[in-house]
Length: 127
View 1 (cartoon, rainbow, N blue to C red):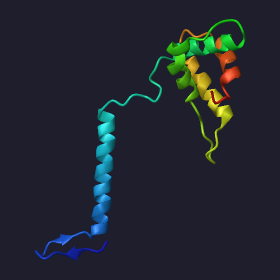
View 2 (tube, rainbow, N blue to C red; view 1 turned 30 degrees about the horizontal axis):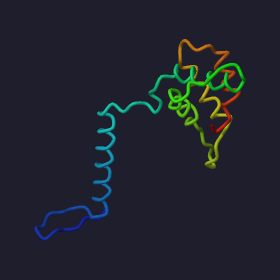
View 3 (spheres, rainbow, N blue to C red; view 1 turned 45 degrees about the horizontal axis):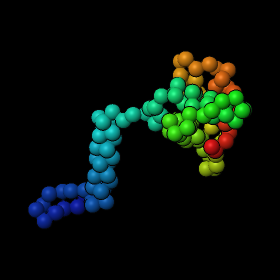
View 4 (tube, rainbow, N blue to C red; view 1 turned 120 degrees about the horizontal axis):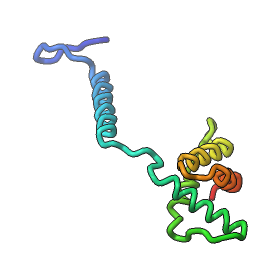
């Protein structure tokens, strides 16, 4: 690496290298700040509420019940916000359905048969 002399006779690295160094320091500071803040996972909400609300939506479509109305909008939005993209930037519907099912099954008391029914109906849809 080429070094240059300053007017005071001290050696220093070229400006281009110091910009990279400052960028690394800034990136490190941002990462440490994020880790220190205890950032929550992307889906920190209740998966059981999601299952209940999505089953209500499923039941209403099947003519057997009623959805949760305004109380379930957030849980339904959380379900439909789970989207997996492929390498070319397109939505991968198979992996999206798998991730949605995995999220529903993270509720310990959820009936796996019901979560599969919900996922079969809504897993590959955009909402």
